View 1 (cartoon, rainbow, N blue to C red):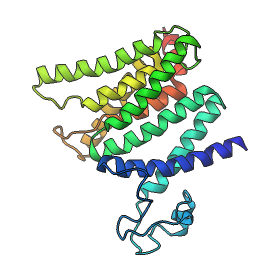
View 2 (view 1 turned 90 degrees about the horizontal axis):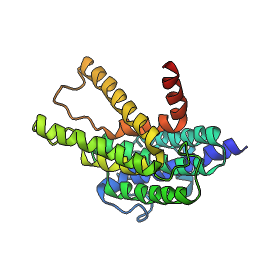
View 3 (view 1 turned 180 degrees about the vertical axis):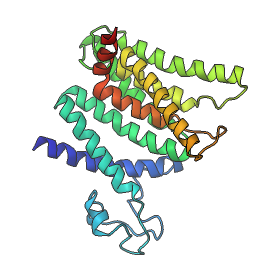
Length: 261
């Protein structure tokens, strides 16, 4: 029953994340006006806003004008529900689950905004940073089990390593390749709150996995001739994917890696 309830809460949160993904990059309020059709302005009723089911009931079209509704909306709702469910199964009803569910809610918004607009809004980074700083300071007084050890400086070292590494990549890219596009400023800022919440071990793993996944996807896109070598690919989505993997299976991956040696 709790698993089902967690999934439903994830669907509801995902519905709100859709609003954030559409409005934040357009600098619109996420509260006002009420949800409406972007084509005809029809204000959606409560029965038009039931996650997944409203989309299926309306057959993917606006009730008023019949304009198609993007499939992205139910997919993001479903994705959020699955993410919440997986994290609940992994961590149970614990502070770790609450922290990671909140983090992934922000990161899902980051993923789709960066993918579409190639920006990571400062408002999202600031929200994540405030929450991460509160958690890191709380850990200094009451050690939390999300960091893998009880040393108070663990999250702060993670923030330094995460943002510091990407800053170094940006500086080297600017000096060697005479380009300011090697690493976006949003990616550098995003790793600050992620480092605070992940600790130094999972931060290093997240960086490694993000580069590995980005390289693999980049090679695939080049092979399929979807992009060229001069194409710009947002790095934020790869950070989000790598962070989720680290949250779910990070310490198992680290223990497996060290076990090889």
